[in-house]
Amino acid sequence: MNFDDIIAQTHAHMAGDLAHVQIDKSWSQGRSVYGGISSAVLFASLQATIEDERPIRTLNVNFVGPLLCDEPFIIKHVELRVGRNVSQLMAMAEQNGKNCVVLQACFAKSRESKVTVPNCDLHDFTMPSKRTFIPNIPKVTPKFLRQFDLSIQDGGIPFTGKKTSHYSGWFKFKQPQTQFNMVSLICLMDAFPPTLIQLLKWPAPASTINWNVEFLTTDVNYAPNAWFAYHDITRHAQDGYGITEANVWDESGQLIAISRQRVGVFD
Image (cartoon, rainbow, N blue to C red; front, side, top):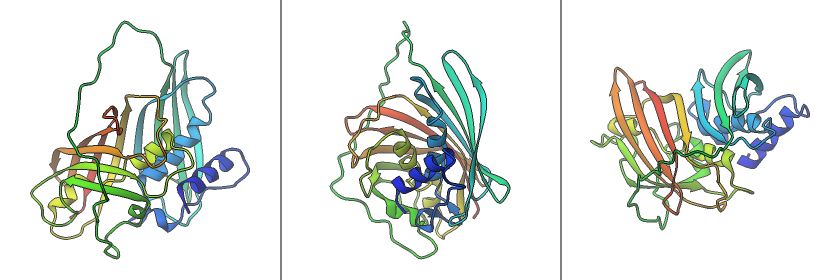
């Protein structure tokens, strides 16, 4: 099951032509569906309801419980408020009568303003010539990673007892998408491993509890096989939970998104 298949299912479900959505184990992350694809599905379902020019500005995703692979789920919407400029909407993935993933999205029109502060965050990463191999260890390496190419240029392989707690590098889809759009970007942005688990010497479960994304651009007209630069740092970790913050740049060096996560590590 590829990315386009899943998004086509989503649109058919929201149109009433399909009773549910179901994602197979090729997108598994432990016992759950990979968080990037579940977030992309919920975002795609909301984006289809926007009738005017209101691009996405902010996403906030709560991974309430495991969304299981190879089991059907339905999508529900809540309209929190639709104003003259800003729409606040919510989508939920419900499986077996329980909310598993909840996404709140803020769509807002572009307006003329005297306030302009350009972003100056840059990176010095070299373009990758090939992916960096993450060993395929049964029951340890998530299957969803087969959907992406990662080039880790700084930071450690998970569960190798490194002293570092950050990642620098690049990522892209392994198989080019029919069309790269904002839904594709959201799916991709969660592909790097959590920064914290490279500190561990042995495999242990880890999961994102909350994911917040701020978008700096509304134009995602990228090539289907485009690389994106990624720099993720650990801001704080204690009591089994960590806060990470990442920048995402396109190939031209433009910062396009800021991602923050609360991650639980169950070691």
